[in-house]
Image 1 (spheres, rainbow, N blue to C red):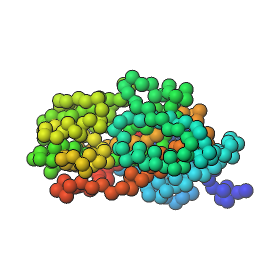
Image 2: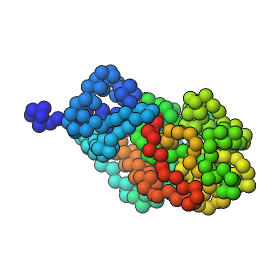
Image 3: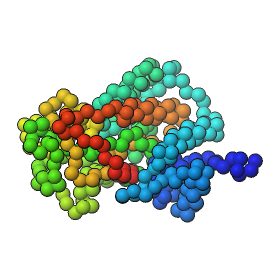
Image 4: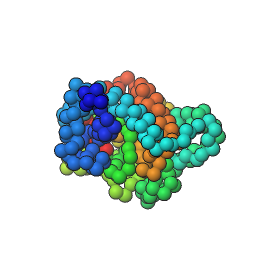
Length: 327
């Protein structure tokens, strides 16, 4: 068969998926164990095949085109079918399975996401078992994935481990959450933000800095972490009747603003979006049961992403279109 009749092979599909996910040629080369020139050549070929730039330059990096995002999902499905053929994996029937699935997650994950996961899980796999393991600063999640103690870890570190597989679940705007009666709730200036007293959660990874502090450090400024708490879920309730400011993702903030006297305000800095993703080890990459579970997580996250945000009218802002940071 001629090259023109079969212009895309599995290698190009894997490059496409990884490039659109990483939005960076160097990181794609590392993840696929290829040279940068090889990935650049593959990107050029992909652009010719699909007659689309796929990745375009924006402030702070590269951004995928709408066509690239669609192609990534199609390529993932195609690669899944190819992998199943090559591994000869037995079919997995969730309705009959009694398998235990173990998910590691920090507590800042929106409860509506986990509710969606549990609803889908119980409906599709009524005899299976789901264990949710909290992540902490001393918990070695990479070892847990390698040994089977965990099947999937959800995180939002700016630089996830390169040796693990990754897929994006949700990208979220960074906002400020504060007492609804706070006069700054209609919109903090940069000066007010840096002068404010902040409520900050403890990190849940020793080796990673959060999106907010990493960005502020790059700007050579810092916030006043006046109150530090061990759990994200605790933070919103401590804002009531105080002048504290809590910086977090929009979905998390608006979940609490619907039930507590709190206001959501757009952040005054161009923080990169929080990027939530699932991580898994090579040991379970081709297992049909784990592929099913990872898709279930992706579908639950899609439901959250498609839910319209609802803030108080006086404090509502449109989502930023700034380029999302990689990792």
